[in-house]
Image 1 (cartoon, helix red, strand yellow):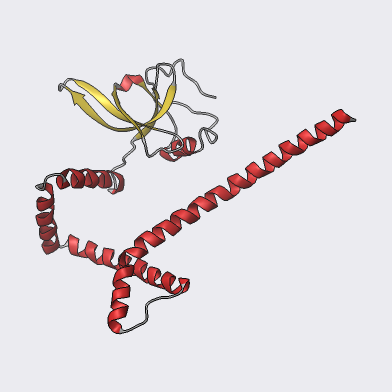
Image 2 (cartoon, rainbow, N blue to C red):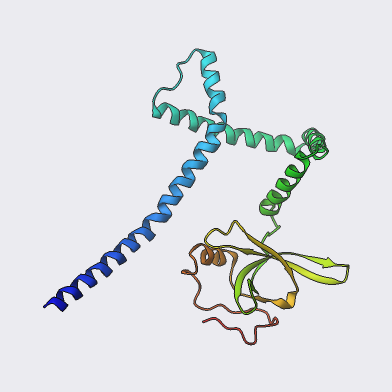
Length: 231
């Protein structure tokens, strides 16, 4: 009788833990999405919110006192920010706009400290956002942190050493935060190509391996693929 009660209680605990985990996996993406959208809304819309408040003061309109008033101000700031970005894009596309932008860019690139920050940020943004220029060219497996241990890596480019040896640059992200990681330079023969897309690789990293595809194959014949198989 005692064993039966213990068995029922153990099964009950397992069932509760399973249901709670299912609920967590269901609500967590919604929770994270809500806070990301809220942050972007407040950040982008809040940029011009002080300007709108000053303009309202100039017109003699009472400043917002309730949460609804603050929401309306932030929403107006969001719309005005998008409109401003649109017209900045138009201005930057014409001859006069390009000349003015180039002038200020030259000033920034000649200013100590600022030039390093500006140049680095600009290169990163261009690498990520320019159409037709894919930042992560393909997903590979690479021996890291030690030989025989495979880590997911993204090939980001190629370079040469002493104009003789060709190396590929591979970014190896950490999990579950793939925005940080390690950059290594290695030979093409030292990596294993996979059939994973960038999206599938990021799903694997963010889930800590829970969402790893069942079958990973190598679309190309590279060194190390003969004895490597993941099922």
